[in-house]
Length: 149
Image 1: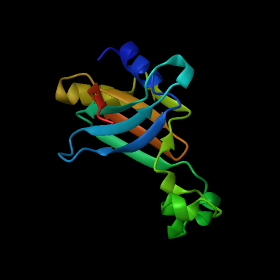
Image 2 (image 1 turned 90 degrees about the vertical axis):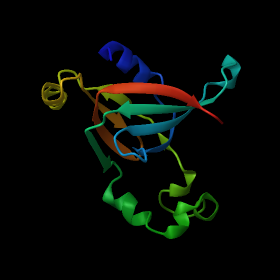
Image 3 (image 1 turned 60 degrees about the vertical axis):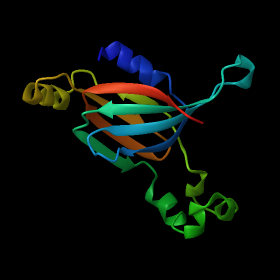
Image 4 (image 1 turned 90 degrees about the horizontal axis):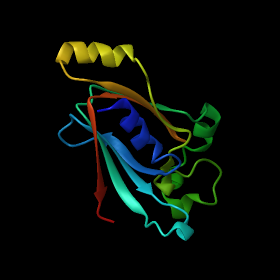
């Protein structure tokens, strides 16, 4: 995949809602399920998109929230929006993360270069930052599709 097109695809979901991320059930590819919405005045309809990172050889996920926020967010009532909305702490029950500050292609990634040499196909490394997680993925290709609402 052309690095410029890859970065453009990542930029298109900047500041959107990440609904789910993780390896798909066959465990080779990693997916982001994103709800993309624009200002209603644009006339662009919201869409649910699947970003499928194919041949994903590395997926690192780290929390970005400080320990103090975690400490305040352990109450199981916070995993449901209705029971957590009036409590102190992070309401996990919102069931989405903000894709901000967003995703960046790591240019000249040594890890991607090593995998490309070992496997014989191009690899890329991206860093995806949300308000909850910091993800690093090393993969070969990206496929994007619109999912049913």
